[in-house]
View 1 (cartoon, one colour):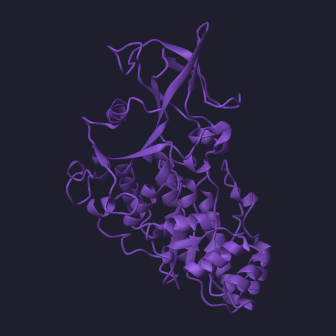
View 2 (cartoon, helix red, strand yellow; view 1 turned 45 degrees about the vertical axis):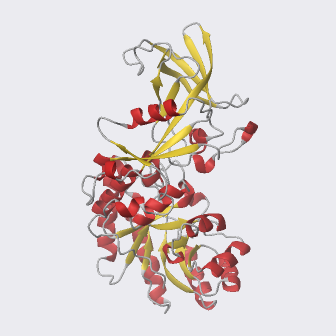
Length: 438
């Protein structure tokens, strides 16, 4: 069986050196952020150092990622995270998470390739897509990715034909709707009445089913849904035993986690449900597939005002990013975004625009599509062309979903690395300021 538990998880927090030496991070400059030299000052310095910059850019705060991993290990100590690469495939983020002990949830050949290219072992990858093309299954076999999910007989046949050594997790549909904005049960997951036949199909094909996976949905899910989902997984374990199949060992509780207050509530429900249903299950390995949890708050987007129009009291601004680029999360992830002005060239004596009069404002993206509207009736101070707007929490389903519509490239944006010290205060080693790499 692949190594589905990292030795780093559950241990004393790592120092900073392994993170800064990680693939995707080493040989890149990481700038320390402190109370005196915070994120806004850093973004301002990037703009001042490169006055001719003509594309939006983002900042990845590695300190935030470290703090989130510490919180995960504290609140869900028995759950091994497998970061969902689809959420944000940035190599520096993936490399940092790997150094912190995370494994990875990949859903395609390209995602597997991106993880392996950083020197990460295929044993730390689960191919968590219940419906895969045959060529991608063949590729997984050749590189040693040997755990995947399924929820249909046709998938069993494809895996038997192209990757007979692969071990399986049966993806089930949670019995109760969690109310999530994105309900993955509409597309994936075996129904309770389908479970026995799907287990038998895999067993008859000579494939080993080692566990169960589910996903309660992403965005605003009711954490009480974990109770029924974990109970449903236990029922599948029992069904497999009744059918005389080898004992299952893996429980995959999926993703949909956020880093805010809901995480504590979710962790409490998950821990209680695991104890209630699997408390006597020796050797059980529990994994999760967090994406948004690690990526969302770690990234900040900086955009330049490239156009302006005044209509009465309303100010209309065009910026150099929009819903076809990084801000596609507004349309496809139902995100509600916010922004703050970084600098007001019209008021050099007040560069932060603090206490300035505000106006109802519309913010458009750069494309010629009228749908490309980022904000409406949003209060902003008077801005001018070449001022900057900063959008926090822009790491989840942003760059990974962008397009090149109208010739505005999503892949051309720079990403700068920083490290906020307060986010990793409990870690051994020297502070970030002594670990700036060039």
